[in-house]
Amino acid sequence: MIKTDREPIVRLSGVTKDFGKSEVLKHIDLDVYEGEFLTLLGPSGCGKTTTLRIIAGFETPSRGCVYLEQADVTALAPYKRNVNTVFQSYALFPHMNVFDNVAFGLVEKKVPKPEIKERVEKMLDLVQLKNFGKRKPHQMSGGQRQRVAIARALVNNPKVLLLDEPLGALDLKLRKQMQMELKHLQKQLGITFVYVTHDQEEALTMSDRIAVMNNGVIEQIGTAQEIYERPKTKFVASFIGESNIIEASVTGFDGGLIELTAENGVVHGRGSGFVQDEMIYISIRPENTRYSFEPVENFRLRGIVKEHIYVGSIIKTVVALPNGQRLRLNQHPHSELPAIGSAVTVYWDMDKAVIMHTAEDTLYDLIEDALLNRPDLAVKQGRRAEGGKSF
Image 1 (spheres, rainbow, N blue to C red):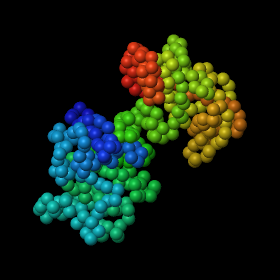
Image 2 (tube, rainbow, N blue to C red):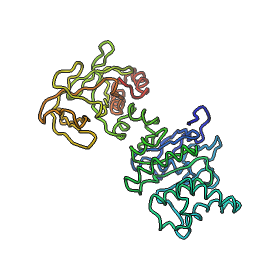
Image 3 (tube, one colour):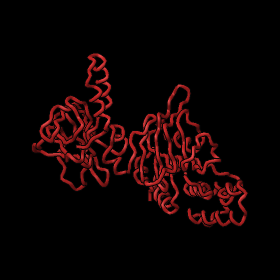
Image 4 (cartoon, rainbow, N blue to C red):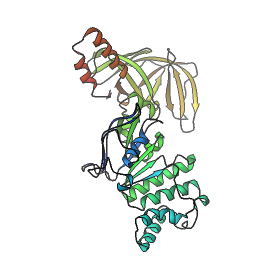
């Protein structure tokens, strides 16, 4: 249970990290709550591992503060923080058996031997390695070594467990199995997990909340459903799963509808906070995108069916628009499919699409403001600051 009514157990406030002249983290604000499974998700180089290392104490922020249980630990060494880290490489001691690997931290803390034995055996039982205590790491599979690394981190009873792509070295089948085991273990123990991955499906499967990172900033943070169904930026929409993204501009208002004109046609939607001539993105998931041979009210978007791709549980139908852009429509494998080469109207339920402001439009307005000294720009930018709107 995520205790969001309390102070966060981890807080990053205005955290920035510079490596030379490169700013890899840009004013990160992040709260992680007790008992939460939070995932930092993003492509390589986005700053997610650097964020994790700053929480662990392996990196010091150039600016900003790190708090653990409301205490400022920005300057504290890693061993003085009540957190443990599991790395992708596992970092097990090859000359020690499983029992001694798991017990290592307790031995260093001079915990009494009877307590060490009890805690290590309990932890090995928890990670389903009860009879593996005398084995060496090289005598175990990748999944088993990963469990040893997790047991070694958890036996010290950390308040927060940090995991840096711990499943990345496993094959697909084992990785999916370990995802469910890790999620179950986290819920069973109630320990806060901060997890780093670039795998979107992994993040959606395991997380209570996901922080999507790109170019050193958090573009959106929310539940898996919020991130998937209501992305706030073009990057989030395109990075999480598949999405059809159409560039358009606001060309009119008719009662409760907004007219949106794209290069390939005109569609309508519902929303507020948008202005005349504003450039926007429309994001529609393939499973919510449909076709019709007949005209569809409020949708003048025609294309040609190019191919059907069978991928087991669904068939991906590809429709090419006049400018060459291809839209994907997911259909049931037993659906009646339109013939290749047939002309169709593409449409969707208005409440299943997301309309987003664009950075390109903001940049255009800044240039226009500089040239024309428009006094109304500040008002328009204020409206834009609200973020993505559904329609």
